[in-house]
Image: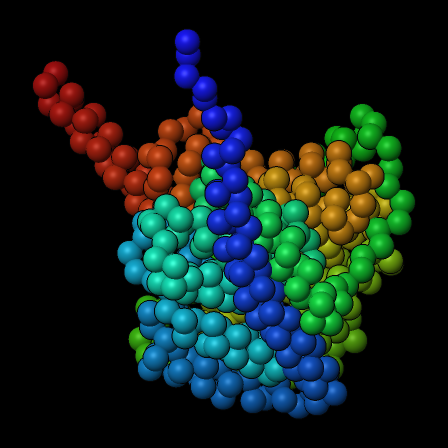
Length: 448
């Protein structure tokens, strides 16, 4: 007689209980931190808008934040890339100092007029706070990876009010073309609970109304594919420009606190110089720019608004101001979609909404998270066309991205790349491959 076998579902109960508790605790920490951050950011933005002269203090603010990171923040200066690296190759616990440093640094950046986002701050706080539980509960190496992913999901979900997109972002952002399903349950729990925690603290997220959504027909699909290609190239341009400017500034200015000082001075002078221009409202390009994003869903915008925001954001991030890239990417995508709408004979609001998520999809290599984000923010009707644009953007952007610690899990195209290679190492890999090919051709020629 065969022995009685316990149903495998019973073996899941300890796993579910364990990750319900751990993910819930991560969500409580990350959601509360995001709430503090968002409420502080609201006050900082309101104060800056009523005191426009404060832009002249941006160089001083940049120097102060840069000096703080120079003196005590070097172990956490890598930001999001540090979190991603620790998930792929765990070495040591993310220092808790990352939380207050990135929170204060980002609020100061917004207070004085830098063009930065907020996702980077929330993700770093969520990851750093989650990693502190590794010591408390003596988690194993694999469990530590999962809890860091849950921290990313919790931070993203609570800062944008998109729990399902946040859960997917934590799973998808680590490697191009590959997701880790062993962290699915913890990431979903952490994202949903963190969003609820933020709301319980009084956080109110911006509501976007896109209006008419055209039916899925041949013309609308073709038009959205064209728009998706443009969005992907824009995401590629943003990521490349930010990384190249950052590398250039590091070579040019060796003393790190002077980099944001120089960037702040450049931004302040640009705001002053363009302030009297009747055609360019330069104040729209500093800070988060949420009012302009909302406006892009409602009426035609200046066709260069996306470029203006990109320039100010690239300068801010490239010179070392703290914050994220995602909200500026939302701005760039929404205003670019607004500009493309009449050319493609599509509604302003609809294409602005698609651009909102599609530029981010290309720049961050997270098409699934952005498709779900479109549904959470704009409703399910936009899903088919948003999916087409996000996938097109993702493919066109190539193997670049705003997170250089991201790995290649599966190449987007047929050109082979080593698995687990960092995005920042791809250029060197291609150079070495070309050099090896040239040597091989030379040797063959000599043998003949």
